[in-house]
Length: 163
Image (cartoon, rainbow, N blue to C red; front, side):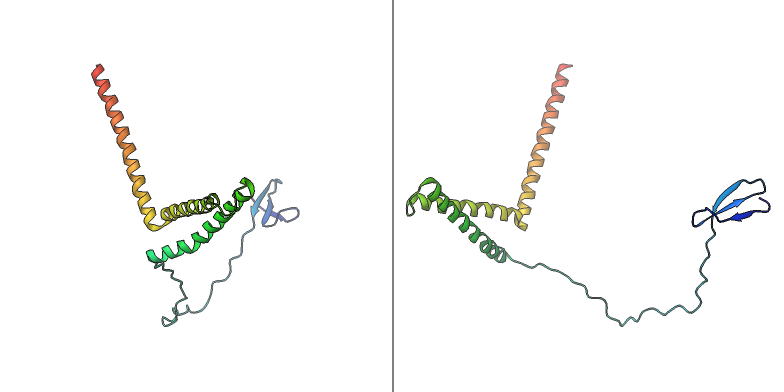
């Protein structure tokens, strides 16, 4: 392109329009100016005697006794409230007398059912329960794999007998 004429009218920011003598236009990006190089010395490394930032390290050290106390503190009030609500529902909806064996049976039966469900869930969610559940599921996996292998072996042997 000889004798290029640059026109900026109607061109997007960051682009330039360049026309040659024949009127053919090209759009090229505007060359960017580079910042001048930094002049000066490089700073020395940070003082090694400076304190490191604070790091929070969380460690969980509990025992079976701590977990049992926590389970009791959370489960007994829950089971008691559900048992009382069930007893009130039995008295109000089913016409069970207040001081009867039926009302006590509902109260303590529901209490025991809620407590047993919470205990089962707690055992499965505890570290020991997770290990036991993992072992049981591993045995289940092995049993299913063994069953599949025996079925495949039986099919293979029946195919051999037919030939």
